[in-house]
Figure 1 (cartoon, rainbow, N blue to C red):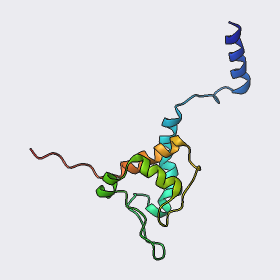
Figure 2: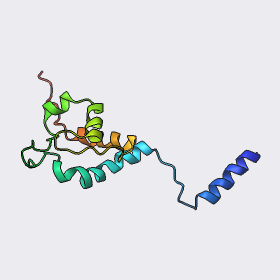
Figure 3: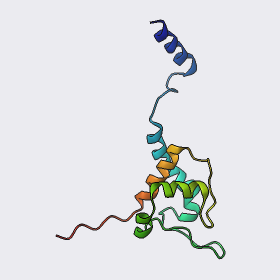
Figure 4: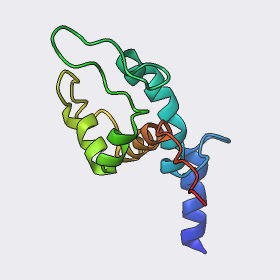
Length: 120
């Protein structure tokens, strides 16, 4: 009982009403991925994920609608490219949490073209 009262006191002091809403960080990170993509990634990859214009002599930014690209990269490959960079794309290191990285990968996967229906 004493531990329960101590925990309640800590919560009451440390968390003003409404400020301590607990949420799954992965769910929040996935929800934030759209905002992160819009503000960080879309500058080069376009808001619709179709890529952009090449900078200098480098390749154009990746088109995430490319089925071959989507099929040839694992989620870990995508996370690694975000963290370490690739080609002209700078690495973002530890700027994003693991949950945010998963959210960004989820966002990138959302651009994958739908698989055609099976032939009957």
